[in-house]
Image (cartoon, rainbow, N blue to C red; front, side, top):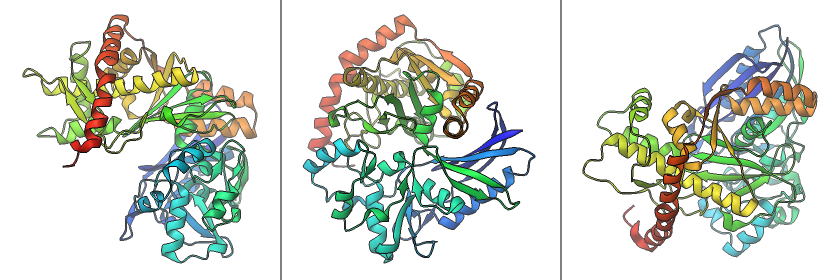
Length: 490
């Protein structure tokens, strides 16, 4: 049996899966991603991360499968310093969400940010690799001339192959990579007192970086597929390149493809970057999507509401709008305006409103926000996607999936295979290093549709009216309210 291994180094879990050529998951290893603290914030310990990955790989090789390759995907922005001369880790791994670099990011002039957006496709953020690199250089005293910045997945590839390489998507999340010209922005790198040699070589997404010698002596090709959201989109949209991928978890990220001539506008609120097999991607975010549901389920209940009970009782509620308007900004707004001062807001609660109706209203608000993002995509980029392909835990909530279809007025598809990210990473390896026909057969076998939700015409019309006449006009009012001090008490 010929097989491929996919590795997903995620924020919550590290997963490794052995797939056969027919897209079947033969064997899986999964472990929580161990998070530590260093007195300043959160860190990952390199030796722990590598130990888990190495152990998982060795376990998956305890079969008679002929492993054709290893394809790596995972979180963006997290990274560390490695000493090029000694070949040793020179720092801990800073997670993408650790906020110790906020002060460094604030040093960038807002006007400069607009110029950089045309080069990077990104808004300025403390999350990006350049700020983590600078902070670690300052705090660890690492030798700058010998230091190399590696993202989390670059680190795994280096441990497997010994090469300092990355792929364009991860390079872009450093904030010093020119996505239009496909190269490091040497002038900006030198503005920070660094050199291009402080960063890894950029090779095409999914291409072989080198070989790993396993404990039993096998030499297995290794590739870096790319950012987890983009790998999921590659797999889910393989047979429908005009669709939109909705990766829904704590936050909700909409990803789709744009051609190589696409224009980028900072005013859209989208982020952009190189897609793994050519052209660009757009990325729109609802930061407090699943987080809003968790907030209700665990914080607003006297006892925690189980998923099973929640899903079952939501399906029993009357269909159609609740009359509640919820604005899902518990952690600020991500797209289309990056506005951290925004806060979650609820309107329209009546005396007879019960908890489940309020929960449904929260879910409606998340979809109203999503409808706003898709409307901007239609106007700015001509994206007329008729299907939304969903990945993540929310696909198990049938009421939510139907609600999404009704409010977005699009067909919503939930795939049978839950591991869309790993499947996408493996499919990319097959396309780049085996042949496109094998990749196509793999995807078509793996990504079967489990459930398809069709929008109800009458309900969609009602929701569209509420979204246009009530939801959207209130966003400007809320932005002014919170910006002008309405949030001063938290």
